[in-house]
Structures are given as C-alpha cells and as structure tokens.
Image 1 (cartoon, rainbow, N blue to C red):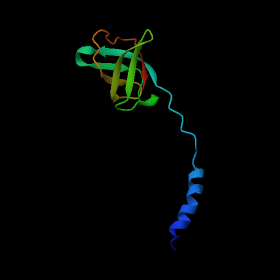
Image 2: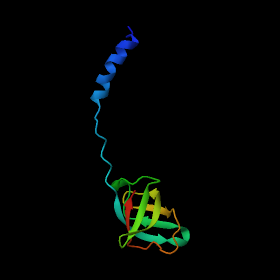
Image 3: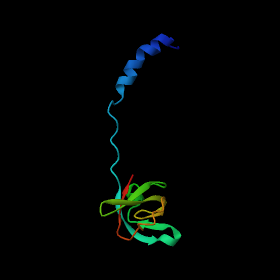
Image 4: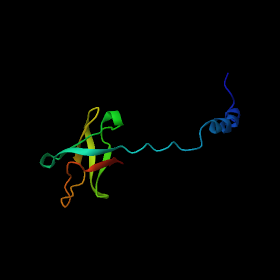
Length: 104
C-alpha cells in the first residue's frame, strides 16, 4: 500500500529532526616532519603515513620559523611515511630536512 503524497510531506519534519543539527567537527590536522629531500627530482619524504590518516592527494603546508614556505601533495603512502611532490615552486625558500609539515 502506498501512502498519499500529502502523508509523506507530513512525515518530513520528523525525518529532518532526527538528524544532528550541529556540523561534524573538522578532523585534527596531521603534523609531521620532512625526513628526506630530493629537490632535483621534486621528491620529499614525511614521517607520517596511513597510520596517521594521510591519504593520496592530501595537501601539506611546510613551515619553518612560523612561516609557510611551500605546499606538498602526498603521492605514495606507507604506514609511517609519505612521499610527496611540491605544488608551488618557491625558489627563494627550499624545503629542508627537519622542516615541519601540517595537513590542510
């Protein structure tokens, strides 16, 4: 037996009120360190991986001295490490081993 269309509309407020009205909290940023650099090959390694929630294509900002110096994109991910390439070539600041990274 099918319900008339008006009966379905009468149930709509009930269906809407069942859901949460508060947005889901944003995931905590993933923070790590640059552990290796091969700038000639545009290849950088991080000490965070799938165990920390890193996904292919995820963006990371590279920070040194409180300044954002570059952006990386995750390409190859292992449990505890990630291989990345630089998105924006910022020749005035090179990425170095020990620089901090934070997911965006």
